[in-house]
Each structure stands twice: as structure tokens, then as C-alpha cells.
Image (cartoon, rainbow, N blue to C red; front, top):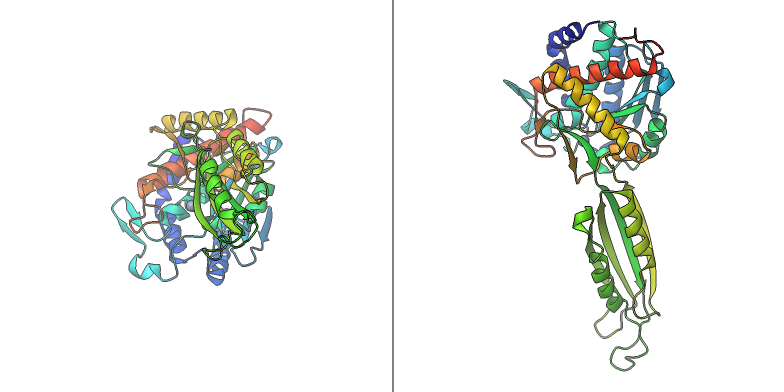
Length: 394
Ligand SMILES: [Zn+2]
């Protein structure tokens, strides 16, 4: 193939891509509606097989009360096998409840597309599928690709996390088709820690036996100060005690108190520091017992050398296609965090160009749909060339 042929194919396929996107948006998939998610996953699987042919391997990991995770592998052509597959990560669930289409239907107005989930991240799914199709239809080299598509991302991927980790472990690269940030891809995301601290004191009559009791609430006050003191804005770390409770009556020395703590970190070193500090913390009254539960639902995605190199490569290809690809770091987490924590090169926010995720002005652009499909296709072709012994795969 030549790059011009590839671009011609994507350009001439825009209408079909928009049909796919309209149908995908037309199937509502709220994260908390199991029957709707099942229907959505059925459609997505059938659609991918229709566009790309039968996969080499296909699995559907049950999500229990949540959406299932689809894992569809295509063997690829022209090398890449030695370097492991390229994982194409995405989610088909949205934050929008059933019936949203009634007041917020799929619509196109010039370059702007609207509809629930169009930006986060159904346009990204269309881009990923059509990038692979473009390579196949133009006879271009494509590395082995593995679609990993979950239906519980918007609620923190409780069922799919282990499948994502298992499927990304051997990946040569991971492209996450979450929406871009103003066109920029995301090369760093903060990690999220969630902790519950339970304090156990000794109850006593606060007036009659003041020295007998050990106050869990007094200890809680110390904990709040200590936890907030762990914040280090320069290092990108915030610690917030957002929920507290405790005690039974005002004339009883509190026998129990609890705190809920949200932590955001930019590096795993900071995660370890906060972990260690919370586990080691003790109140001034040694009679108060401390129990710390929780951990890191999302590890930080740090811009590693491998992530930086993958970004530079994508940016170089983007400039050959005629546009600047920016990069950014964001406070929110995604499934890209899991893959990055495994040491894989990850580009997140590789999906739609647009605005307004999770809001009623959610929108994606047609021009971005075409541009990013082309970029994904040429990046995949370049990754295929990595894994082949000769250079003729280009
Ligand atoms: Zn998303």
C-alpha cells in the first residue's frame, strides 16, 4: 500500500463509519443496566466480525452484574507477532441512563456529531475498527491486534480489571481509544487510592469516668490532620478525608470512628509513600486501635520512556499526515492506568476529537473521526514493521 491509498480508503469510508457510529450510539449501554449492556456487547461483537471478518480467537468474559468483556484477536499480516499483539482498549458502556436518546438523539450538524456516548467513547471504537479494516482492505501490514472491550469502565472496571491486565500483559503496545483532551493524547494519568480507616476506642461515661475511656473521635481528629499533611502538590499528590463518622452519644467517650480517604498520585513512589504513612500512623492514645483497609483501584500511569517513545512515534506520523499531535497529563484515571502499571507502552486518549464527556453537550467531530482513524492505521502499520524480520512489510 501507499499512505495515499490508505487515506483514500478512510476518506471514502467516512459515510460507512458514520452509519456504524449512529447504530452504536443508537444502542444505549448504561453501565448499570445489565440487559442493555448484554445487547450492546452482542451488537459490538457482531459488528466487528462483519467489518473485520471472523476473529482468530474470541472470548467473552462474563461480567456478573456488570457488562461482559469482549476479547477478539486478529492474527495480523506482515509481521509483528514476535513483539506481541497490539491491544486496542475500549469500553462500550456509557454514563447515560436508558432513554437519554429521546432528548439527546444521534445527530450530525456539519462537522459536529452529538449523542450519548458519541465522544466517550463510541467514536473511538469506530476509529479502532476502521483503522484495522483500512489496513486489511489496502493490503497493508497489520500487526496482531487484540480488541479488549469492557462494559464497566465508567464505574471503575470492577469486573473487567483482571481481564484487561491479563490481556495487556504481553502487548507490544496498548492504544486506548478513550476521547482525546482537546485533540491531545494522554501520556500520564494520576492513580487513585481509596482507603477506609476504622478506629476502635474504649467507651466510658464521659462525665463520671473521664480517664477510663479512650476516644476514637479524638484519634480521628489527629488522623485527619496527619492525612491532609501527606498532601504534596509539587509531587502531584492530594489526600482528602472526605467522609467521617463516629461515636454514639455525646456523653459517651467514642468507642468507634471511621474515615474515608481519597488519594491521587502521579507516581508509584508517591503511592508507596502514602501507603506506608497510612499503615504506620498511630494516634497519641495507644489504647485506640487502628485498622486501614483499601488500596489502589487505579495505579498511576506515569510517562515512562516506553510511553514517551510511543508518543514521539505517533506524533511523527501525525505530522506526516499533516497535523500536530499534542500530549497531556490528566488527573482522572482510565483502564490505560492498568496497562501502564504493567510496564507496557500505552497511548491513552487515542480516540475521538471533540468535547463534553459526561455532559449534555458531548460531541465528536467528523474530521477528527477521519484523521484519528488514519493515524491509528499508520501507527499500526509502523508497529507491524517492528515485529517483522524484513522491511518489506511496509
Ligand atoms: Zn471513557
